[in-house]
Image (cartoon, rainbow, N blue to C red; front, side, top):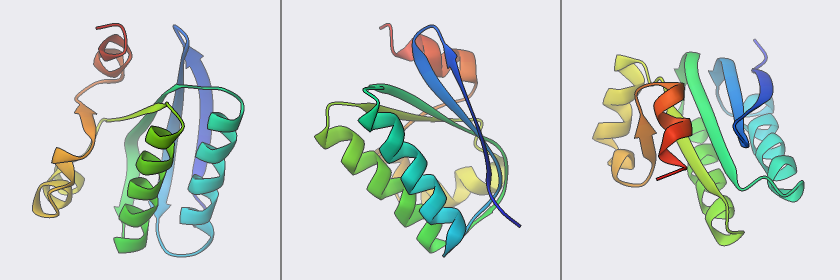
Length: 115
């Protein structure tokens, strides 16, 4: 099942709604490419809305970490929002909650950029 990504702008912030699975192969590569493109277009504020992510494997987590690192080195910020309870647990176990800025809602994530 391919990962669907819908991109829109909210108050100058790029919001990418993800739908599906982030797993090894096409899905995690597509996510990496999408984020690379956004940063190349000069987008500095990016939110990944994880509301419809059904499953993520270790390479999916790797893709998120790689995206976070490359965003940071290019002066961009990446936020995550709407982590499901399962995904939240995975992020906690892997200590990735200390790496990413995570917001409960998309509105809170958008607002976090104007602080």
